Image (tube, rainbow over all chains, first blue to last red):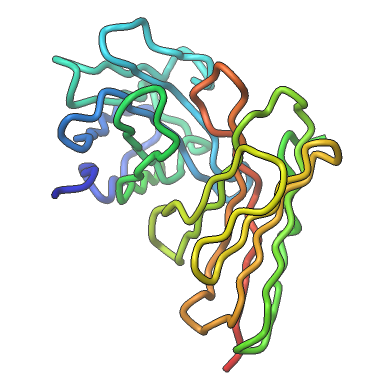
Length: 114
Length: 111
């Protein structure tokens, strides 16, 4: 079946602009995660959604970052007033439910802030 | 001190030999442990997970966990050039959902 999909695959934006990144999890997966991977910081957790429960936002680095998940499926990560330090690969992952060990990663969105 | 530490490498191993990748973690509340492989420019893919002390084998891969020493390792037997990648160690705390990753070890298998 189809894996996790993300769009766009690449995004170049000017400092100060807002960006939206999209994630489509594997069909039937109720848990969805956002991570980002940068050279200096490695792979770090941003936010977790599970069904209709309140999301775990503990990894969001600042209030410029927000995410939503509509209808328990597609998720959008929004970064407002982008800064150069936001440049990274943003990875989305999904798992069947919160008890599952396996998290399946999407191909990522490479964000470059100029 | 980082929560999850790995030697960044590069680790160079001849083809056919055993590659040994190591990871230490600081949180004693960590319950489950994961090894991901990441090829350059690609997303991480799960190789193995382990949650009990001891060894877990899957084909050419063996994960080893020692909770007392807060140490987890991955052995790759009969290393192949296609095993050349960055290997990420990740841990999950009991009751939490997020994975905490190490910086990764870059492994090169030389033909």
